[in-house]
Image (tube, rainbow, N blue to C red; front, top):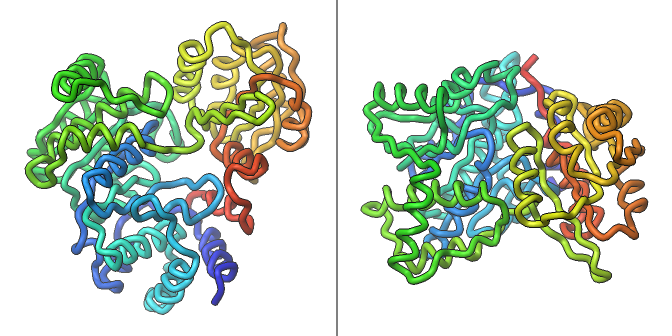
Length: 432
């Protein structure tokens, strides 16, 4: 089997959709030798900020000299982004080997019990991290938490970044219902850290009490105290390379988690500062400066909370500038409200379809943008390539609305190397 064939095998698993439950993943992990029992985890759930918080935790612990596994999704360009050790993507030959070794295990399941892509990749990743002798694994949920395949592990700490509306068709139509699913990662007597608020926080507090799990709440006041403490002990507040006020809250979550685990994994203030200062997480307010001076800001704001964070970041980082927007979204997202939030910020808006069967119609996006800002020039185009060509003489462009679109931008702009069509592996639906 070569790498292309391994990717095609993974594509073949997509037809089985997404299965919400842990039984198949537990069974497959057992067949693989229960690699999760050889590893230590920090399990991260939440609506927004999961990936950024994971990246910060990974960077801090790597700065402390640990060998750190990082499991995240979705990927932006290459599927290998999902599985990293010390921020090195899993090598192609290793992914091929893992696929070859998992295939015989899948044949031990009944013919009518098909494992999903995420279930299989979760166990492949556990196997790889155990083989790599990772000291710690930063372990991001795929969707929700309670019934997510990643929830077969018992972590050192559980982190729930925040709770907002997203994936309501799977997780529930109220913040309390969504919080219940995310709080499913809370384990008996295992510490929990969260930045959730209001009704979502109340649900998390209740489940933490039931599980006798110590709960640390990180909010605006906690964030200030975390940064103040950092300044008093090191003489300087860490300068986050990730822009946006919301990243300070993600950093406070990471700092609180590191503090809670100091007895198990000691990390010095100097190492914490070095880790935060060097953190890298593409596609989230990522600013690209072209040789001619053109600025392109990439941000995968794919839900209302993400759009509000982008709006706040633009006001803080680029005051008085009205950029050109290139916008594409998935049809199953709340794109009407996202459009209404972003529309007043732009002088010109190009809407495009994203490379997905679930893409929202560019003409419908354009109509919604125009109704929210009739002073802007709004044009529906057939592709991102057409839009970026139309913007070649513009000074400042914002590409947003979907991580699918950000991934396409990274590839077409030459920021990330092209691949054999792996972005499509982000597609999923409920199990048939």
